[in-house]
Every structure is written in C-alpha cells, then in structure tokens.
Length: 403
Ligand SMILES: Cc1cc2nc3c(=O)[nH]c(=O)nc-3n(C[C@H](O)[C@H](O)[C@H](O)COP(=O)(O)OP(=O)(O)OC[C@H]3O[C@@H](n4cnc5c(N)ncnc54)[C@H](O)[C@@H]3O)c2cc1C
Image (cartoon, rainbow, N blue to C red; front, side):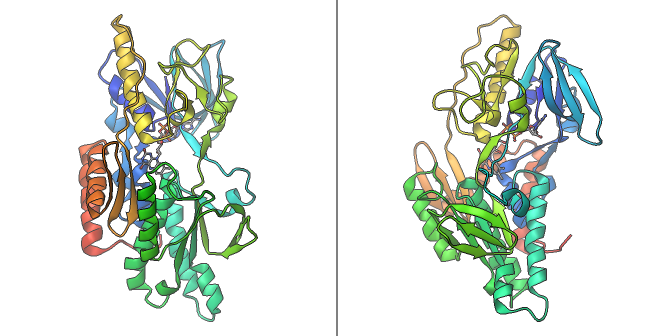
C-alpha cells in the first residue's frame, strides 16, 4: 500500500506497474501534480490541467482509494482513513506500507499567516492566488478611491525568497508587465510586487553569483526585494515586519518553507529534529518491518537530503527497483541520490541553472529550464499541452477572465 500520489508515490507506482503486485494507493487527490510548473499556472502561462496526470488513466492496474490516511494501527497492520469526499471513515489492511505523504507549508507560528495569506502547494491554491490578483485589480478600479488605497490594493507581497517565492514573484511580475499592463493601463503602473525574505539573501540553496543575478534582474523588472526582513505578523490589508515597519497590501502569498503533514506526527515512528520520518539507507522506517518512507516526509542521510521533487522522484524509482530485486531474491543496494542541479524561473524570459558542472543564468538558462521541464513532465499528452500553452501565451497573451 502506498500513501500519496506525489513525486515519490507516483515514481514508485510507475516503477511497479506491470509487476505481479497487488497495489493500492491511498491519496486525497486522484491525480499527480507537477509542482515545478505550479507558479506558471498562477500567471496562466500554463493551464492547470496541463500539469495534472490522472492516476487511473496513467496507472492502470493500481487500485486508487481517494482518501487521507489519519493514522495506523501497527498491531493489526491497518490504516485509519477518511474519505476525500464526504465524512466517511474506514480501515484498510496492509502487508507492506510506503509513506510518501509530502509536506505542508509551515507558518512558524507567525500570527495571521493562516488567516490572511495564500499559500501555493495545490491546484486550489494556484487558482486562489490567480483569482486574488484579478480580484484586486477589479477592486482597485472602482470609482472614488484615494490614491493610497488603490496602491494598497495593488501591492502583492510574496513572503519567502526561496525558489518557490522567487518564481511566484517572477510570474506575477510577468503578468503585470504584459497582460495586466495592456488591459488596465491606468492601474498597472501603480501595482507592485514585493518579495520579502528573512535571511541575508534570496535563493539560499543556489550559488551566490546566481542569486545576485536574480536580485539585479528583479531590480530591473521592478520587483522590490527586501532581504533581512523577517515577517512579524500578517493582518488583513498589511504585513507587519519585525523591524517595526509594515507593508500595506492587497494580497499576501506565503512561501516560507515546509513542515511534515499532521499524519506523520500521529504515526508513532521515529522522527528527526524537523519532524520528518527517520529512515535508513534503504529508506526503511526503523522498528517497522516492511514500512518505508520517501520524499519530503522522510529524513534520509546526514545532513538529510533536501525536500525536492528530484530527491522524491529518485527515491520512488529506487524503491520500485529495490522491491523488484528483493522479490527475485537479489541483494538490495542502498539508495544513492544523484543531484542534477537546481533550476528557477526569474521572469522576463530568464532563468537560473545551478548545475553540478556549470552555473548559468539568462535567456539560455530559460530555454534550458523549459526543455528540462518539458522532458520531466510525465506523459506525452502533458508535454504537448504545456508546449501549446507556452505557444498560446506567447501568441495571444494570458487570459485575464475572472472566474
Ligand atoms: C509551488 C512549488 C514549486 C516547486 N518547484 C520545485 C522545483 O522546481 N523543483 C523541485 O525539485 N521541487 C520543487 N518543489 C518541491 C516538490 O514539489 C516536492 O519536493 C515534491 O513534490 C515532494 O514529493 P513527495 O512525493 O514527497 O510529496 P508531494 O509531491 O507533495 O506528494 C504528497 C502526496 O501525498 C498526498 N497526501 C498528503 N497527505 C496524505 C494523507 N494523510 N494520506 C494520503 N495521502 C496524503 C498528497 O495528496 C500528495 O499526493 C516545488 C513545490 C511547490 C509547492
């Protein structure tokens, strides 16, 4: 039984397909979501449907139970589940269990984040951010507003200068500079994107020179970057900063980092200091025979591997190979992560590529970024759809209908 249909779970299920296994996946979503292109769905550069893989179509032979796991009864080897639709609760017996439930956005206990900020980890979130931006433009266009109020409504604050926050800010600025500027010529010049980061610099995991390039590029594009600026609280209509300042704004997107989902705490397994499931070099959960944990919810190695799609995908593919080998009585080698580097879109047709052999930025890196994601998208159908989305956005502009 596999919990979760994200990068780790999907790679595992795809790798086990066709084997002689009785596989059940328990997941609240009946699709796999290609998160690296989720920021592009906020601006409408790609359509959401183009980055979803329907599980039942792609993984024939796998039983899909649309539910969330809420706990495990280890003695009976049963999972306690809640239906994704409706309130029904039920139990599912398992022989072997793979936990690949990902992570959730963390607010570090900062007041108001949950109530007043939008996050970006799901299809629903991408829709809400997109809709939120268009709503603010509609609200700012009402007659009789004071100039300061128009500017407040059109200030979009992104909190968190990691790759996700940077990409969201870049996509919002792209939308502002092109489609919104054309459709709201009187309002768009008064709109601004502010990127707030608590640390010294943006893109902590990236090469310093690339992060500096992104910052200079943002300055040219008009994105206001504030580093060393921890957020103290988020309220309706403003972000309060720990240095005593505040930013009056219409919309806040929180991209401050991740923490394990609630289920992980409830499983009663060994966790690391950040609350992730401790696994050994073969991704097995200590003290639980035939239980593995993969992806963002697992801590593998010292220091633990980063919470990225690349790690999760490789771990899922590894476990599929490992289970196949074990079934044939062969020795299972330990998991080894191979880093292919990191990529980030920074707007205006430019990207960063922090690769093991080369550090690359600008237009060439952007073409590389696009070609990598095109190859990484799972199905041919989605590769074609994303390619057409890019072409459509280029030729006809992104759609601004508010629905
Ligand atoms: C906007 C955004 C952009 C990103 N961009 C990049 C990028 O460019 N490059 C990169 O390497 N990484 C990127 N990431 C990170 C990447 O998405 C994660 O590291 C990766 O998805 C982790 O895979 P996973 O399988 O562990 O978890 P996920 O892909 O999050 O999948 C978790 C699965 O578990 C399911 N689930 C959750 N709770 C339960 C439960 N209780 N019971 C059953 N199922 C459950 C979920 O529905 C989901 O199907 C990005 C993330 C976001 C949010």
